[in-house]
Length: 179
Image (cartoon, rainbow, N blue to C red):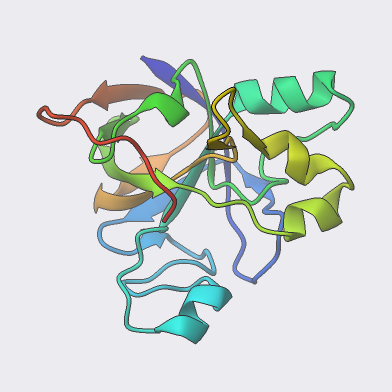
């Protein structure tokens, strides 16, 4: 089990999202009042390609452990500043397989769809930060650390301090890929 440490949303297309006391997740839509809420894609680059694509990026989660790592490396980052809706602690988000269900608080359930593919806006936020969240492993494979994306299966209110319960999908597990 893990814990939600912060929740964030923005009704405008802004890179950072202000923190709130709670957010409401809406089944099939995402975060109520967030610019990325909807059944079809809302991220501008994806809308340009095909506005009818399903929105697999309704809720963006990021692990607070990444904020700790970035801060230790000279890049202070607070919850919501990299565009995430939910900041977590105690769950290895990047190691979860596709299709994992996360039970948030007393009611909400989201399903993990894939990795966030960090964009150049991260570099504009802090010079050098993109290299901190995208790198390569010892075999030369790209490693993305900027969080995961999900869809809302069961809506509900979530807030800092709520528990996160992980429900893995049936095997075989599929590793996360960018969505």
